[in-house]
Length: 441
Ligand code: XLS
Ligand code: CA
Ligand code: CA
Image 1 (tube, rainbow, N blue to C red):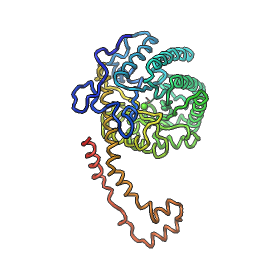
Image 2 (cartoon, rainbow, N blue to C red):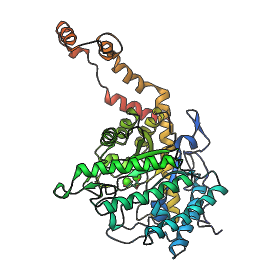
Image 3 (tube, helix red, strand yellow):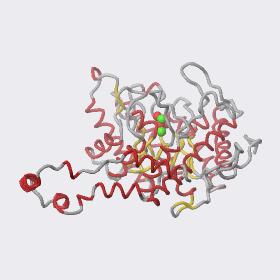
Image 4 (cartoon, rainbow, N blue to C red):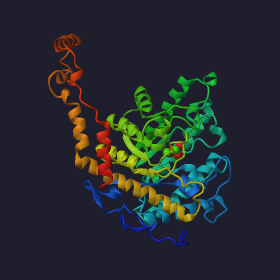
């Protein structure tokens, strides 16, 4: 089989002193950090849409990168993409991949044709996975948002026909996920939201979304899907009001419809910041509520208000992310999917490798910093001490449900002014502790 990147060999780990652009400086797949190898802790995944299909097209101009993979026929191209993806994963030591159905195989016209053509590519991937069992499917999903039929949504469309079509498309996508042994299935609410309430029955749309999720979960389990279902929150774009605004909103929705035991979160960094949250906040909300699942690793731009899906290079954010992951007990079925694209000006084949190396090294560094934060213990200890009043006395009584409102009134009247029971929050000190840990790796 022809090599797509003959000038690039397997990317070695050379360590922090290396200046070789095509080498890892921090990501050593075999290095053990907190009881597991980096490979197991980080579970990196390649995103099929950006990496194999994204050519840099934006609303001001056409693509800059050639992602035709040498084929003009759509079916031949779909298979060439598979070969190229496996070569990229191999050379970068990436074990997992993620796709939308239409990234694997495009729209051909009828749903029947789409399904048959998709099946051909999925069978082809299954063969490649059999030959190389180190490559695994982290999650699959259905692209129910780009075709005009989804202009008003898919599961929340005003048209029952579009709802039915979407359900049929998702049925096939979950079947393909199961065939490839996927450990996850993602629902990102592509156009599930609205522009104006003047034309929208929001209550019906949300009820219908829950109906669709229930059908997919039940069907998936009935055909042997043992992995996790995830919802990926995003506050806006493409619609003005996306229903899955952020983790807290999605948790409320899942609890309302009795879906909270069936679905976890796929948290994307850039979606967190679009919702005016930090990445760490979204992860913490998920972890605290038992919804931590998987991660779309990328970053936005602080000066831009949209979803730029940049490769993550901010070690600070990666460290705080990996701190949450370690505190959540690490990934089980989830992993770190690079939902990221090289900038439009970074258009060469080498840029695919350079951008993944940048992202993987950033998260390897983040993992090492997070592990050191935990081993160092100063930050965790500070938080523990800050809440010490809840382990004894009146605090313990409140937690144990032994204190009534009247008891608290009596306590407060006897105690007098309570301002002097507060200590400093020491934010600047804690930030400097984090800097000290970060820069002494
Ligand atoms: C878009 C989303 C999407 C999901 C998968 O903003 O990030 O790519 O990850 O449908
Ligand atoms: Ca995403
Ligand atoms: Ca995004």
